[in-house]
Amino acid sequence: MTLKEIRALLELLQEYGLTEVEVERGGDRVRLRRETGVPGPGPAPVAAAALAPSAPAETAREAPRPDLVTIEAPMVGTFYRAPAPDAEPFVREGDVVKRGQALCIIEAMKLMNEIESKVAGRVVRVLAENGQPVEYGQALFLIEP
Image 1 (tube, helix red, strand yellow):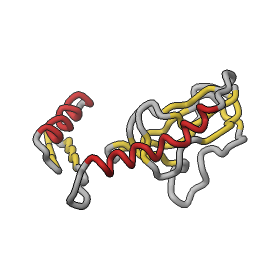
Image 2 (cartoon, helix red, strand yellow; image 1 turned 180 degrees about the vertical axis):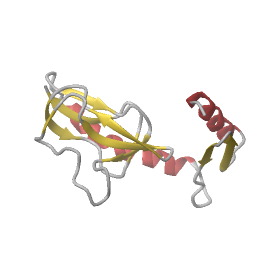
Image 3 (cartoon, helix red, strand yellow; image 1 turned 30 degrees about the horizontal axis):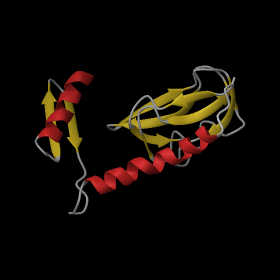
Image 4 (cartoon, one colour; image 1 turned 30 degrees about the vertical axis):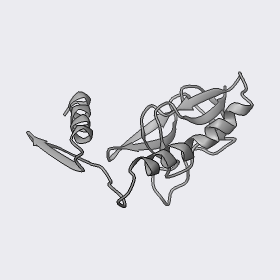
């Protein structure tokens, strides 16, 4: 399935208030599931989750350094610093990285997406917490070229 078709399924999920939709076509299968959580007001948990990951990024914005390159999340998903729970992180603060080197993984819809450095340099700061949700455009790393 194409990304456009998956987005259309997501819109149907939201539009009709569905909790799950599964489509199988020609050997490809996609299942989208929305967590309903505990009965009660829906927007509150989402708002709280959205505010938590952005706090470290706001701290970094307080004292911006023009010489640093910000690596941002190219998608919404779950941020992982290592390729497996028991593995060492891809990078740590102070590590020297090459352009194209994997910095982290963002899991989106059960797909693991490696996020690579767009510059060579030294990792100054890791701004996201392991296992936490990240938003599109959220600052993940600061790198000194």
